[in-house]
Length: 524
Image (cartoon, rainbow, N blue to C red; front, top):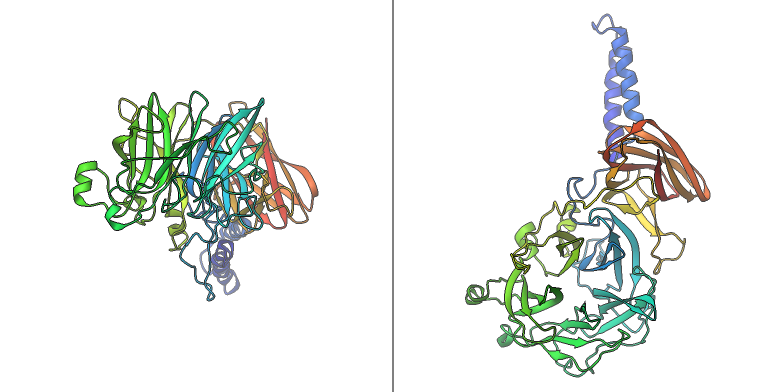
């Protein structure tokens, strides 16, 4: 039963109690003044009719994971146009015939999830990229794991490139004119395969990372796996190659990266100052002697450093312990370090979302925490948290804001704005599917003059209400937007009970069904 149903049951119990007081004897006989009883009844009726918000999976005080409407693993960050775009492996929950949840084997993953933010707390959902499979851009591929992204100005126009692993057997590349797609396959085959020189014996030909260097040369790093137990300390399965000017071919043969101790998977690459940092996840054969020598443990993110992008890497620092050390549920460790607005951050995945959902299947979601660096800028040990990072700046409510820009949610879906177009549609809308569902926009600054009303753009064949509340989904309504079977996109308006000033978290709590919430703004 939904939470609204539970609330109604509780209220009915209270109403029955009041009925016993007034129906079996008079107010005077029970020493309860009539006006007190009437007031209590009125308050109970008001409580009964107030829409109760659902409880979110993620506490409203936390910023991790960054997205809760879907899972998203193996995060990779692309900074473009003042925003951070996160590309994530689209973990899908699979079920056994008896409806119990299967362990995540990754074999059914053929989609990449994309979100973006300019403040690292409110994230705009750009939907799903169908990257592989029969419905995907790269139909020759069966899976899309561990994406990486880059952009380059070619012939005066910015072009975007999405690299991903076709299971553990090759690297694909897709292209687009927009960082969120739609993406197409320019090659019709793998960019890197087992026929690529030096790659035939790579255990896992996957997990790409890309670096656009200051001189315009782009590099791709990939590979992983332990070919034999006796090679666990130095598997020799990491590779690096130059990308060609068009970003969709290699410029020369991949180079074997020597001495990557205890490599497992998850290539990462950053240039900080004049130093290149190659990062990766260690395998699960790390001995006590190795920990004493290198400082890392099983399944930990480790860095190597060099003054060259393709050679000369030496051991630097471990930077992120396995998520199980922070949150209790272990698994593979996948990361991306990125710079945004003058600071470095660590994106990584954990299993905290599935745990809150009472699932135990290895389904992963993305977190972001501030990267810790030493006095020279080198990445050092960083802790994973549920609190996440602070919001970088406030939201301006007087500009139109997509309804799928949010910090948290409960009981909602996101769908392509073009109804029926389920593939590669970067413009999404919010669809309430459970009474009392809500979306939250964090850190909205209404200023000193304040807002007197709210506008919302909606469409659909249904009816309902959008309750606007401040600082808590259980708060009082400051405005209620009425949705009345608008069919085509329609702007609706609601006046505020009082002028709203200052900074608040804004909650949109939904009732009704069969309508779509497209965007909103406040009016001063």
